[in-house]
Image (tube, rainbow, N blue to C red; front, side, top):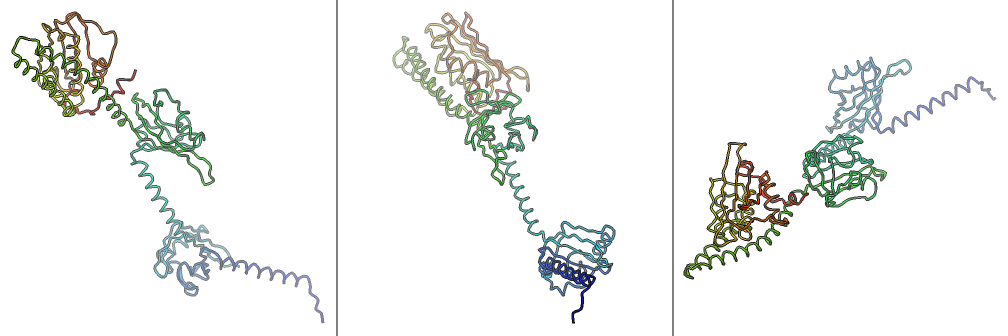
Length: 488
C-alpha cells in the first residue's frame, strides 16, 4: 500500500540529507587539513576532538589527545598560561600567538602559529584552535636574515665602492667606501641623485662626462647590459679627483624585467700615480743621461786645461767623476729614505766645481722632498755649467745657502741659489723639461712656488716653504706625481 509523502516530510528528508552532506564536507576538510585543528570545551579547556595532522605534529595518537589541556601537550607553557589564554578568549572571542615554541611527545621542537576562536554550537560554547607549523618558514627567514647580514657585511667591508640605482637611475643604496670615494653622502631615493653620487665626472681624456652619459646611465637605459673595467674620473666637493675602474651589471626581477643596476668601482688613483711616476722617472733618466754627458765633458775639459802635471790632473779628474757617480748612486739607492740638505748638496755638487760655496744648518728632508731637492740641484748645476756662472773657466761662482726660521708649525725653510760673475743672463724663450722640474715640481712638493730671477748679476733661484711640510717629521707619500704637473 502506498503511503503518501507530504511536503513537510519531503522537506525534512531534504534537510537531513543536506545536514549529512555538510557534515561529510566538514569532516573531509577536518581530516585532510594541512594545519592542526583542535576542538576544546570552553569551560573545562579540554580537547574534545583533533584532526590527523595535529596527531602527526605532536606525535600523540588521537585518543591520547582527547581530554587533555593545551599545556599538557606542549602548546602552552603551563596551566596558568592556559587559564590566561582562555580568559582572553572569553573577553575578545579570539586569541592569536604568532610565534610559539612547541615540543612534541618525542621531544622534537617546532615553532607554530595558533589562532583560537570561540563560537556557539547549538547553545554550547566551543573553542577551535588552528595550529600552523611555521618551523620551515622560520628557518627560511633565519637563513634569509643570515644571508642578508653576510651580504651587508661584505657590502660594507669590501675594498670597492658599491652602489645601486633603480630603473630610473635614482640611487637606492651605497656602502661606506662609496661615500668616501665621492667625498659626500647622497640622499637615498632622491630623484636629483641619479647615476652617480659624485659632484662631477670626467672621461680619461679630461673632458666632462655628464651624469646621464656615464657608464651607469648606459646600463640603466638599456644601451648596454653590462660594463667591464671602464675608467672614469670623479670630482669631490673639495675639488680633488679620483680615478676608478667600474664594473656594472643589470638587476632583474623574477619576471626577467630590468629593475636597475649595481656598480662596483675600484679606486685606482694611486696606481695611476705610480704609473705616471714610472713614466716620469723614465723621462728623467733619459733627460738626466744627456745632462750627465754635458757635465762630464765640462769636468774633463776644466780638469785637463791647467798647467799641473798630467798625473795630478788625471787624479783630480778621477775624484770629480767618482763624486758625480756617488751622487747618482745616492739618489737611486737612498732617494726615498730622506736625507740631510748638506749631504744632498755635497753629493750633488761635489763633482761640478770648486766655485760653489754652500752654507746652512742641519735639516733632514723627508723622502719625497729630498728626492725633489736633489733633482732641482742637479738641474741648477747643469744649467750653470751649460749657460750660467760655471760655464766660464776663468771666473764665475755660485753661492748656495739655506736656513730655517720660526718654530713648530709656523717654521719656514729658506733656500737660495745665487750665481755671480757669469755671462750676461738671458731669459729663456721656451720652457722645457728642466723648467717643469724647477717650477711645477717644486711648487707641488714644497707647497710653495719658487722664485726665479734672471737678474744682470746672475740667476737667483729661491724657495720659501713650510718647514714641517719638507722635513722628515712629515713623511708624506713617496711619489713624484707627474699628473699634477701636467695639468693646465
